[in-house]
Length: 159
Length: 219
Ligand code: HEM
Ligand code: FES
Image (tube, each protein chain N blue to C red):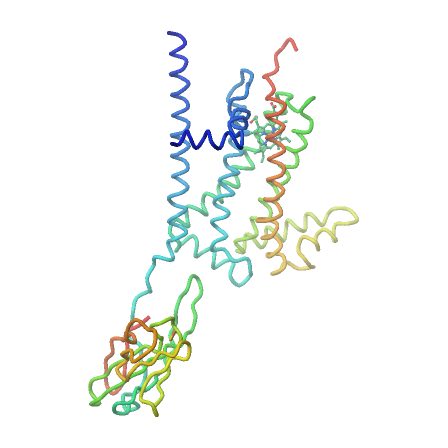
């Protein structure tokens, strides 16, 4: 009797110790993981309308490159960055704004007027004037921005 | 399954022997004061875990240190908690280390055959203080800057070699980027490496010699 009591007490202590240990470990592990992945899960900050320039610069049917300076906060650092956007129109009223970032692996594409296509120098991707993939490895068309024209000025939504 | 794996490993590593030596060793009838060393060790582990996490965002240069610390506290998920644990843990560690040492003194536990345990303890106390001193500069705010200005000036009071010590601590005559970088290096590399060695020796000796009993009147 005495013996079995002893064993019970012992195993109870053992279980209690492990349980408290597990609790303490979880108390560190859960905030620890949240802390590590927190900034990775955060999306871009609020989007806003960025002014690109005058609509008159866009010739009919020719993607025209606009560059805008934007402020981007990464961690605790606010950087001035350049946002490059190709704008195209076929009637002078409706505009399409395309990112110049290749959808393959992120190099910058360039519009070559002579050939009427966008070319990516990294793995020879070719996109047509609408931004659709003409050839090469990219999985999808060039990304588009929401765009608006106000008082003869072009704006895209970004951040 | 788990026990088969445990047996398989035990056959090659003899880990049960190690486990038993650490956790099933005989101890005399003792009291709660004897847990102070373990409490110190626990807070030390807390410092290691939270400290490693802090280095994920902290940048030890004058143009980023302050902002990266603010970023941790105000923007990173649970950053306030991780930093808070490290901040308050630092004070707790000093208090617990001293209380543990007082217990050893009052019980006369530093005597033969535990002199070396005591010496490693003295080393650990110095390291704990060194952690506090170097860590205090890292947030690079006004308090940090002036505390280290004063602290290194105190070291300068040392006869003959004082100015030399100050220059080595600051990495020059002035408190600068060099000071911040070396305090960081000492705080996260030099002291942790030394503390690992000394805690290892300290614990080995405690297990090897066995804990001392509470002294009795007749002895
Ligand atoms: C980081 C700091 C330290 C840690 C983690 C630590 C850890 C421990 C632990 C877990 C024990 C087992 C018995 C007990 O807890 O009372 C112990 C015993 C001991 N410690 Fe420490 N200790 C530290 C600092 C010190 C300091 C500053 C001294 C004295 C200068 C010291 C001297 C001793 C001695 C002599 C023993 C043996 C006591 C006995 O056998 O009864 N330790 N230490
Ligand atoms: S990144 Fe443009 S083709 Fe690979």
